[in-house]
Length: 317
Length: 55
Image (spheres, rainbow over the protein chains, first blue to last red):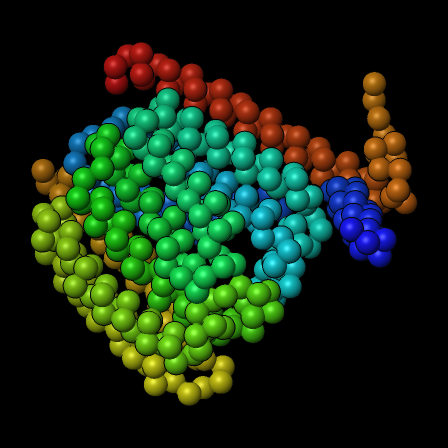
């Protein structure tokens, strides 16, 4: 190492140390720790995990079921905190993430890492002791997948980062199913596949209008590397794949005809949204923004119907 | 041994208001941590009851 680079490294370390001291002295708020858990992402994770539990056959003591939901939420939040620790350098240069607690200097990086690891271990152990070890194993796998496979390995290396990495977000209904049944069936694999194929159009719609941000941070999102046109084609392809996949729970017998009807209508609207994105020439990517918002509504409604369907089935049954 | 925040962060210039705010936030965090630990104990207690009772 040359003397100049050593000086630079020392200056950066000194800067980092002084920033950390100042951040700690400013005093992080409880809200900053809540923000580390990515509460908005957690909401959807909890919701899909709960849907997996309701759709599954079998029964569980209500308190243990509540603990299973809590463990899924805490596990997902913990993975989010570790993700923020690892991505603090790129978060600091992206408009969307610059106000997060670590780049904003409100929480020290090591504090966020400790927080995430402790919560993750707590969630997995609690799930194992209170519910069952299959669900605990899946929760641990989901966390390791999100942190190591997606965040550390794929995110900065390949345009397929969110396709392969998206599997991490697809685990919750499978964990919910395992919590109820103690196993992994074809039904829970279908629920997993639903979120897996939903993730690319969801994230690529976002990355279309956040392209400059990702480019500045050096994250090889599809629109940055392959271009806008190729991304729009891929978005349409995934929505077309999702269209026949979404009603599968009905054909497998763990959802009713209402679910199938809603899945077809929502899926058709998702395809329409993708076609609108294909045709859109607006420099502000208005159609992509609308599609991103709709994609969240799509998943929320799909799993809401699954919950209502499962709950009414349980009541009638 | 009790440390003041001045001892913990000697590089920081402390005003009365900054010290007060720092202590307030630390107190809130400590209470939240206490509540979480208490909740954890309660959860483990009831889980043990249910599991041992075969529920």
